Length: 470
Image (cartoon, rainbow, N blue to C red):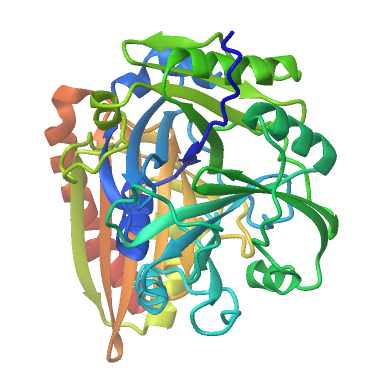
């Protein structure tokens, strides 16, 4: 082992997302991060499943970069196994990777852009102009702090021209001392005296008056904040939790050569971490996922400078240079002679859907939150395309419903969106479905069939059903 101490930078935060296109757009258009390619073939084979420790895992992965010289946002949309939704009552004090912080060049413009994308600040911003902070939740429920001031104690050399930089990730731990000791071992240094947050900031993410202990590590140009909440005490991971479930998947420490990588890996293992599999090495790169005693996943990677950065998402690339999770799209629009409140009630009444949706049977099998037909609700459906289960993934009252098929479908990456718009006393519905056929040669036939079904369902099902109700 190389005896020269090496302090690895934090060079990746990975997310498991429900709708890759939507989450990527949120980071790119909302905050200003830049596209950096992606991978599907590599992420769908036995190597990825081995590294991630998820049997038969298959996903499409996209990357984004910001001002940080060697850092990426990594987003996985899993088709196998499908990500479980983040619990509706998830709080930033709950155990896990719970929050990220982004420094933006234009604070006001970022908040306007995020509002357009459906993410409004949870509370009014805190701090005087020039040092304002706000917190929003991204499409996957992750708490994201927007920073007008840069929390790094010194400027970072080599930063690229970009509107945003990732500056922090927060770990909510049940044992601060153990987490600090582990990160000290892995990074080769202890926490530093950096005032990333004050007590008043806790209100930004919905925890006013919270009592906690915290420590901050500086891992090059990203800060790692470790917090143990004493009041309120956070819940542990949900039963059966896997890193492919919706939210922050893990963080990664990077090295530029194999000896440095081995040094960091051995530090983690000596401290008691366990790996999913032994390190995997490719030409010019290598990777391993390790898990500490508290269950936190950490990726340790190495990458030779140069072409590997471009191949593995650490350099900006045209937005077209990445594989699409879905490759088929159908859409239909209908104008309904009924007020939006009535149409919304019809759309949300899942147990009555068989009256208009064109399936022989529809029944709610799992209640949602906070309403039975809301977020997380599941419905079993039986019709021409067979039996399948749909799940509600997002609800914006009287405006939008998002859902996905989670079981029994001939599609992969099936995401649907129903958007409502008030037009005087009428309601306009835009219904969009995106998917990839499980049978590649049948993609266009399934699209054609689904397009006919959707158009007929809106014009001959939903429209007359909603108009006749009073």
